[in-house]
Amino acid sequence: MASGFSQRFGKENKLLVPFRGKPLARYTLEVVSSLPCFNRVFFVAAEAAVISLAWNLPVRVIQNDQAEQGQRESIRLGVTASDAAHYMFFPCDQPFLDGDTIRQLLALRSRGRIVQPAYQGVPSTPAIFSAVFREELLSLAPGEHPRDIKGRHRSAVTTLELSSPLPLFDIDDPAMLEKMQTPDNYGV
Image 1 (spheres, rainbow, N blue to C red):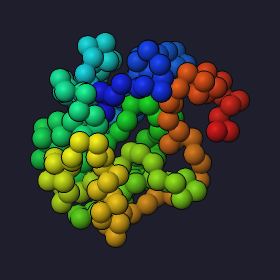
Image 2: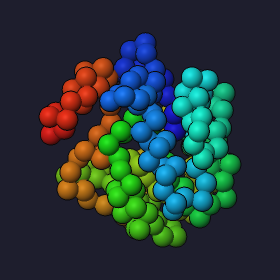
Image 3: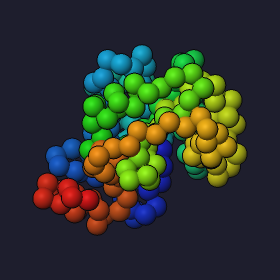
Image 4: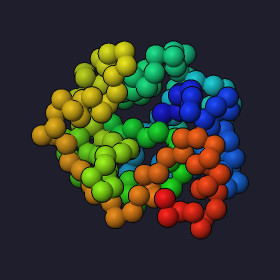
């Protein structure tokens, strides 16, 4: 999902800012597209410059012409494009998310379940939704997010508790970006 407006980041699109040698969103694109466990990877983005980040990767780009509708429109576009048994949603501002964490989450997926990672009990992304929740994902109301579906179906949620916060760390503002540029600051 790469259609957000990054309002906390200021005027720059945070997905395009350089982070340790490449645009921030490129990290998520590369790790996800490198894993053979995915049948299809969709990259939902609004801006041409963000779309260009997928230029040599095995992903299907979906243009989001209604990004002002919020995250629900990215979700709707991705789910509509697929008839998968599970849907996994990745925000593109978690540069330390790694293949091992993704594989651990995928190992927990099953029909009728929602899988999420957490650190010290605080849930995060990426999340996996069984296709049982397809209609709810497609019909999110204005202002709703997938976490609202999790709230309605608490008994269906499986949580993978991580021993480190780093894979889940998202960069939300320029100060966080600057701090995380240096490996010494990864103590999060």
